[in-house]
Image 1 (cartoon, one colour):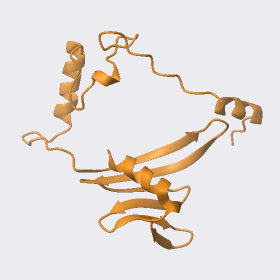
Image 2 (cartoon, rainbow, N blue to C red):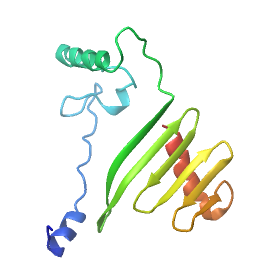
Image 3 (cartoon, rainbow, N blue to C red):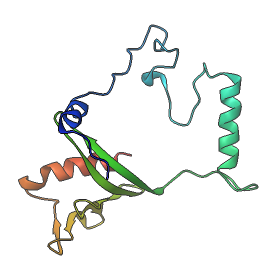
Image 4 (cartoon, one colour):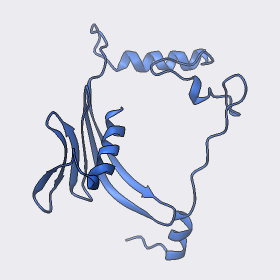
Length: 156
């Protein structure tokens, strides 16, 4: 087992990720990349090189079965291995599973907390494996943060 000194862990936990460079006039950053405000979902930037365009076309062609037509995504499942870094410490959250189905049905589960939250046709809910209990969170002050997070997750 790898052992890391406490002072090193604390020093690493206090580091902040670098900030994105501010956009320059003309809609690019200092690295020459387009500013986020000028990007449009599903479109390559006008400044993309011919090589980048060709690579993107190859990825698009390889992502569907030959002879079929691309259709909009209306549901997906995303599995992540999460490490949280806060101002003073970091922790392994573990596996997080995010499921989305159009128009705004969502469920998010973490293995570390053994909890799952979701928004379904019957409203917002929270399931706690440890208590073997499911609670509706659509009403009440104590679940305001859960509803706010579900609003964000549903906005995908």
